[in-house]
Structure formats: structure tokens, C-alpha cells
Image (cartoon, rainbow, N blue to C red):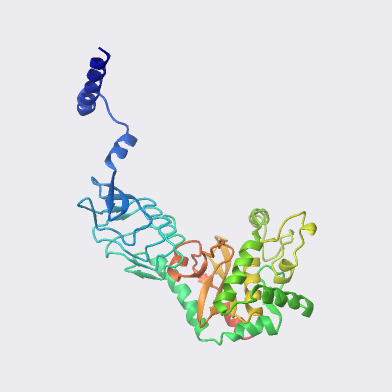
Length: 372
């Protein structure tokens, strides 16, 4: 009897689902969406796809390219975060059938170097949608539809073009020989002049960190790894400063809370003198310490002061260094232990948290002339 009742109940449920509209039963939007997404395999890699819309919702991180079709259906939408975190894809050729790219579609694709965008495809606001955020190896964008992104890539190229015209050793000499460093957060001229004793401490640390390194690239990585591990970002200072600047004129007043940004004070930081805190600073300190230790090791390096749109007060300092015959971009403020912001691609930088309308070419020109 129980078996008959179970079969009868199962039959009723099947019929209810089949004739749900007629019975007045409706699925929730979430249930409908879930039912529409299907799992497929291409080769030995899995992918979630919505055949009715042509939308990829998730793809195995081992994909090396974007499929044109899934289950015989054309791909029309690259869904939110669908390829995010992929570390195998070096070139992303977006199929011509794609009409929409959603938020974070390629977020954190750490190996991505080239993107080919079909003509006519509009991506929307690259920054707000985080489409290529943290794609730090991205250098080439074919058919870039975003004028703002184009302009910001050009800003980086202009800086590189200027640097390539100069003798890289100029930047070493200004810091290493003159013991002089431009420090954005210093009062007055913004110049920090190290004493002989202070600079000896910097050189000693640089020698310690690069011991056994065979190339400048090895030295640069060793220094950067130590900085990333040693320094911590001072969020408390930055929060107080941002509140203060809303009601004060920075050009007429100085923010009262002390912050250390020169290399000497950061290297000799003692937790006992700072309420038990480990070495803390903001991007200016990260940039200065990177530049000082690189130059002390004979590696030409400058810090780049990014300027966002006028009035937004979104400034940031990072570095560009001449390593083994080429200029490379790096940002030890953002980097992790894997140095994910080391030797970065311009297009990836310009599409994410290093977006900028202007870099400080004026400062670089003054540096070459010895005015800084």
C-alpha cells in the first residue's frame, strides 16, 4: 500500500511540474535561472552556459581561450566573473558573436597579455565594471572601444617615451650620489636630503637584501619581496587625513599627524617607539623605500605620482624602474608575496587601480635637470 502511495505521489509531482502553469504553480525567478544554466565540458574543462541567452556564467580556470560555441550554441554574453582568476589564458579573443561583457568577466586574469575585441562591441565603463581589473600583464588591446582607457594607456606610453630619451643612470646618481630623494609627503620643497649616516643605513640594507643575486631583476624582486613583507599600509592615518582635507586647504596648512615616508626612518623603525606597531606608511613611503633601495643597488628607479581627475583627490605613488635593459612598472603598495604588481603591463594598469589622467612628467623633467 505504501509503495502504491509513493508511486502515486511521485506521478503527481511529475505532472504538477509539467503542467505547472495550468495548475497555477510558478517557479521563482531564481529557480528558473538555475534551471536554464547547464554544465558542459569542452575537452576536459567544465563550463556553465545558458543556452537560451548564449551566456557563459562560469568557466574552468584552465581555459586558454574563449570558446565560440558551447553545446552547439553561439556565445553571446560573457557573464559576471566568468573567467575571473584564470591563470592560463594569455590571449583573450572575444568572439564576434558576443554582444555584452558583464562585470568582472576577466578580473584577476594574471597571465593575460593581449585582448582582441570585435569591432562594434561596447564594453561600457571599464573601471566601474572591473572587467580587466588586476590583469597586470595586459599590454595589448586590439580595437579598444573605450576612449578614456585609450587616453590613459597613452599617458603611460608618454611617460615611457620620455624615460627612454634619458640616461637611466641619471636617476641613480640623483638619489645614490647626491643622497637626495623627492618625497611627496615632505613639507616645503618635497625634497629629503639624507645624511651620510642615514644613507649608509640604506646602502647596508640594500646590500643585505641583494646578497647572492645574479641579475638586476633578481635584485629588484628580492627588494620588493622584503618591502611587501616588511611594510604595512597605514589605514588609520589615511582615513584621518582624508577627513581632514575635506575642511582644510592643503596648500596653506599641514596635516598635524606625523607620518614617516623616507627610506631611513622606515628601515630603522622600532615598534617600541610606535605603540608596538610594525613599520607603517602609505603609498608615498612604499614608493620612496622602493626607489631608495633600488638606486642603492645600482638600479635606476623613480616614483611616479599619479593624478586622477582634478578635484577628486585620488592620488597614488608607485614606481618605474630600469631593470636589465628595460623600464618596468611596479607597485609594492598593492603587491602580495607573489609580487602580482611587479613588471606590470600598461593596459592592465590603466584599466584598474592605476588609472590616471596625468603622470608627473613635470617632476621627471625637474629630476633630470637636478632641480629636485
